[in-house]
Image (tube, rainbow, N blue to C red; front, side):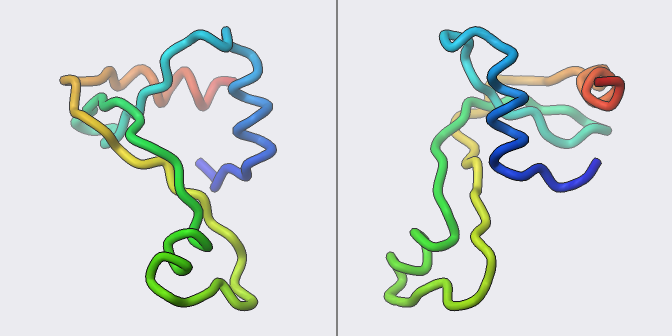
Length: 82
């Protein structure tokens, strides 16, 4: 899988109900499922630390919230077949 840009993520999410819950599933070989704890950009992190992004490109992080349990390996196969 390639890195996803913000506009691509917005397009992907627009296919689902606006009321759908967003979760994070990670570790394809031993899948775990978690709530989405937040969203933060590298520029916000640097600002919090007293610096700035400079010429570096912005990166947006989806933060893990609470672990809910095991995920399903088939999620990666389904995503690749899109």
